[in-house]
Length: 338
Image (cartoon, rainbow, N blue to C red; front, side, top):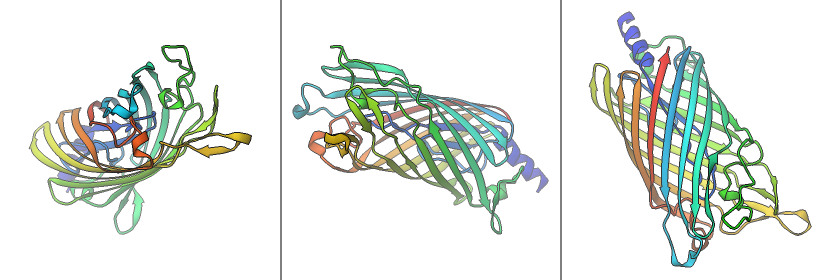
C-alpha cells in the first residue's frame, strides 16, 4: 500500500491541469472549469470541471485559447457577427490538500460586420475550490491518497467572482459606444457557485460531471442600465486513458455541455428593467477532445458544436450561443512543485 501511495503522490505531483472559460458567444460571459489528471488515476476533460484539487503547495500556470466563428445569415446583414477569440491566462495554487485557489485573466477579440473589432483584457476572476471525497461518509480530501483511494467518489464545491476591471466604454469604427455584448467587461462583480463529482469506472475510464450558476448585476452604460441574464451550466464527460507510458499519457474525451441562458434586461420607461428580445434560450453542446501529458506539461485540443438548441428568438439571435459554426479549444499547462 505504501508503494501505491507513493505512486499516487507521484501521479499528482506530475499532474497537469486544464482550465476553460466557455464564454458566451454574443457577449463575454464565462465560468472557469478546472481539471486535474496525472499519468495514473482519474482523467480530466476539457469543459467539465474535475473534483480533484491541486496538490498541496503546487503552482499551476495555464494558457488557453478558444476560436468561435459564427454562422452568417442573410437576414442579419449588414451586421453579422463574424467571430470571437477568447483567451485565458490562469494561475492555481494548492493551499492545502483540500483547498485550491485560482486566478483567471480572460482576453477576448470580437468582430462584427459594419461595427468593427474590439479586443482587450476582460474582467479577472478569483476562485476558491473545496475538495471532498466519500469514504465511509463525506470528508475533506486527505494529504495522501493511494491509487485505490483515488477510485473513490470525489466531489468539489467552488465559488468565484469577477472583478470589474475590463472596459465597458469601447467605441465602434464610427465612434459610437459599442453594445454591452461587444464590451470586454461587465462593469460590476459577477459571482459564480458550482459543484462537481468524479468517479473512476475502471482503470482507464473516468466519469465527470458539474453544475454551476453565474449571476450578473445591473450596470449603467451610456445608453442606460443593462443586466445580463443569469447562466446555468450542467456538464458531463467520459475520459478514456488510451495510452500510458512512464512520463507519458494520452486521453480521449467525449462531453455534453448544457447551457441555460436567462434573458438580458435593459432599462425601459420609468426606469424598470425590461426583458430583452433576441436573448436567452437553451443549448446542448457535444464535443470531443484529446489530451497529452508529458511529465509536468499538458496539451489539450477539443472541438464542440451545438447538438440541440431552443433559443427564445432564434431568427434574431445571430452571433449567440447555439449558432456558432463550432468552438475549437487549445490549452497548455505546467505544474510546479507539489
